[in-house]
Each structure stands twice: as structure tokens, then as C-alpha cells.
Length: 505
Ligand SMILES: NC(=O)c1ccc[n+]([C@@H]2O[C@H](COP(=O)([O-])OP(=O)(O)OC[C@H]3O[C@@H](n4cnc5c(N)ncnc54)[C@H](O)[C@@H]3O)[C@@H](O)[C@H]2O)c1
Image (cartoon, rainbow, N blue to C red; front, side):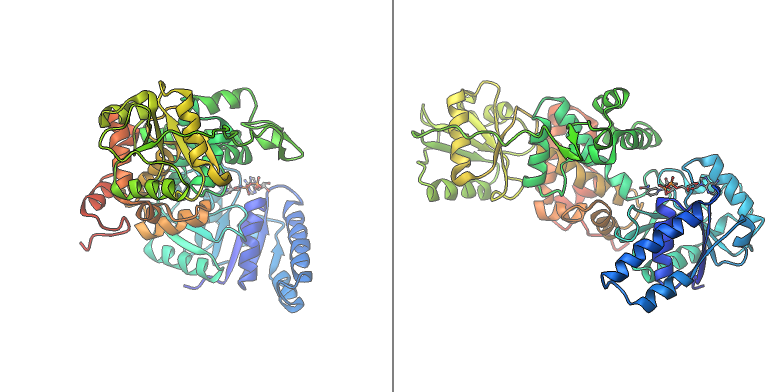
């Protein structure tokens, strides 16, 4: 069936966003809201948005008039009768949604598709009291709907395959990427999104770096559009902390999703983010007022020779080339000379552990993170006994030509290594759980979270074997099951094939 008409129940932010793209795709759209006047108000607001877009030349006046003519505001819910599909975007409450769909079943025909825009409730549970559960599915959009070109099509336990196919086709007609997903907590995008924030909070909680430093490392070094802590401030902790707790609990306290006491405390203290003027940062007129500047580069003129040890030859070569190009002396002996600065390029461990493993003097050792692009922001990690003079030298060496450098405290795995390994591993585990295909997960998360790569192909870019090494070492060093590699990641890294590879049978 090709869906030609829809009714939207709940004409708030999401409902009107969905209504807009549906009408623009040529569907007849009926609007109903329980609050008197809300549907009319929603439509008036949308009209003025569309008029502004038309004035900017986004579409013709004729197209504007045709789109506006497709809307109809309903006075009573009974008037939804006759549409091909009803989408619900009302309050996020299981019982209220269940009652609404039960009521809708008494109004529409038995083959009318029923869809929910829920982000956190089970589609199967919402449909559980219906007579015809097979025509009910999740159709989960992201805010703002016209700009976030993705919609998750969620198959509940009873959802008929043709309903999923009809919704995927409709998504495409509305200009969105429809991604098929199983009915599991957080579906794809909100599930995959658990890694970024929780690991950053864990690093912050361990005192590895400051709020501004963690955000800067992940923005400028790893390439995320926003740092995780400034992102928490934007989404607000009264929204995101309960989501972290809910997904953790729905998966029966799975360590991979473990939230952090830091945000629970901030929520209790009402420091929920930008909208109240304070979260991780303080804000005035929506702008941060207390972001720390980048660390000052120590003024050093005399440098010790630099002795290098890396987990892989490629990293050692990057460091040697850099030192040669910038006129620093390399100590190429097998063992470091007594006064050499010791630079270690390692994965998934702290500098103390790395220095002991390589059998070198920890008081002169500084590690550097080479997981992400060396030409971007650089992160250095001294051990807890490294002498300040050596830390300062390493800082000045790698900050040459005003290059951005952050020196962090000891961490088992650098900030970027920990966060990226968790992002890749969690997405791989979503593939392992067969919640969606690997390529769909990759595309959905890139679109839904705005990451520079899909989280699975990002693993390929960074090197699946390096990601595996980071996870295995952090797991061995901490004993925290949160870091255990997904079998999906481990097998593909062992075979040295793409993380997107799917078995033929
Ligand atoms: N805001 C988001 O970023 C976002 C993203 C994806 C999904 N969602 C989900 O979409 C749904 C709607 O969210 P929103 O942000 O648009 O909310 P909203 O508060 O902006 O709008 C909800 C609308 O539903 C109406 N409503 C409430 N109960 C009703 C009922 N029983 N019958 C008819 N109308 C009723 C309200 O009057 C209101 O106009 C929720 O399930 C939410 O979880 C929200």
C-alpha cells in the first residue's frame, strides 16, 4: 500500500515537524491535539515558517499554497476515520499512549497503519492491548524533523512485514532515510549514543582532565561536532540523565551503559544545562562564560634528546619524522640515555604501565595519543612521577608552530582512545544483537548524532585492531566489564576485515 493520507495526534514540536514533511511530500494531513486550539496554533506557526522559507526561495508560491491546502485541523478525534495512517506524537507515557491507540482502533478501519513516535517506550508494549497489533509500528523521528533526515522504523513483536515496508517507502518519499530496527531500548540512535557521554563522564570523574579539556580533545582531536559535556548542557540533564538510567536499567544493569553519579548530583542540584544558565559550564545569553583557554605552552629553549618507543612502527615513524622536521634531536639508542626525554606512543594503558612494560624510567616518560590524526589537536600524558621539566619539554616540542596540545593526568587509555573505542564497540555490539544491519546502524548514527563517520566505519578508519587492543588492555587493567570487546568487533579485528562485514549465512 502507498500511504497517501495521515492523521497526526499531538501537534507539538515533533507532531508538526512530521506534519510538515508529510504535506511537503504530497500527503493529505489531518491534525488533532487534546488541548483546545493547539492544532490550530501549531498549523499557524508552521504556515509562517513555510512562508518565510518560500520568501527565501526554497520553493515556489504555488508549492507553498499546495502544501498548505493539504492540512486539515480536526475538532474531534473521530474525524481521523478514513486516513491511511495515524501517527501519535503525544506525551511520553505508556498508559496514555495505550489508551489512545485503543480508542483509535474503534475509529479507523482494521488495515489503517498505526504508528508511534515514542523515543523510549516499547512499541510492543504500546500495541499490546490492540485487537490488530500487526498494523502497529514505531516511526521515530528526530528533532528538528525537517533537518534530521532519519527515521527509525520499529518492528514490534507482532508488526506485519508489509507495514514495515510501507513505512520505509513513505520515509523515502518524505526525503528521510528510513532505518529498520528491532524494538529494543533506545532503538538504534539513542542506544548507540550512550557511549560518548558516559565514557566522557567517567574520565571526568577520574580527574583525567577538566571539562573544557575533555570537550576540546574530543572536538578538535577526535572530530566530534560538540564535546560531550557541552552537549549534555545543550540537551539538558533533566532529559539526558533519565535516558541514561532508563537504558541502563532496561538492559538489566549492563555495564556498557552505566550512567555516572556526577550527572545525578548535578540534576539534584538543578544544574541541568544551558537552559537554566548553568550545567558543566556557566552561560550568559546562551554563551559559555567560563570555558578554560588552551593550556599555555611552557617557554623552553634547551631540549633533551628524545627517545621514542611505540606499540607499532607506523607511530614511531610519525614521531621520528615530526622531530626531524622540527629540528629536535632523536636518541636512537636501544635504551634511552640518562637525560633523554622518553616519548611513548601506546594504546589502552597509562604511562606508568607503559613505562614498566617497556622497561624505561617513568620519571622521564610522557605518552602521546596517536589514535586520532596527529595533525589535529594532540594529547600528552605524563606518569604520576614524571618530572615537570620533562613534561614541559614534551609540551613545547609537540606544540611547536602553535599546535594545540592538552596535557592530561594519567588515564588508562587516553580520553579519545577510551571514548572512541566505546563508541565503536557499542555500535558493533548493536550489530551483534541484530537490532539492525551494520550498514544501517552506521548510516543512522551518523545522521542521528552528527558524528563525522558512522560509528562502525569509524572503527575501520581508526583501525579495528587498534580499537580491540585499547579495549582489551583497558579491560585487563581495570577489570571493568564495560570495556569487554563485542564479539562482532573481536572476530573482524582478528580476521583483519572491515567491521561492516556481514556473514553470508
Ligand atoms: N522532542 C524530541 O526531541 C523528541 C524526539 C523524538 C521523539 N519524541 C517523542 O515524540 C512525542 C512528542 O514529543 P514532543 O516533544 O513533540 O512533545 P510536545 O510536548 O511538544 O507535544 C505533545 C503534544 O501532544 C498533545 N497531547 C498530549 N496528550 C495528548 C493526548 N492524549 N491526545 C492528544 N494530544 C495530546 C499536547 O497537547 C502537545 O501539543 C513523545 O512521545 C516524545 O517522546 C520527542
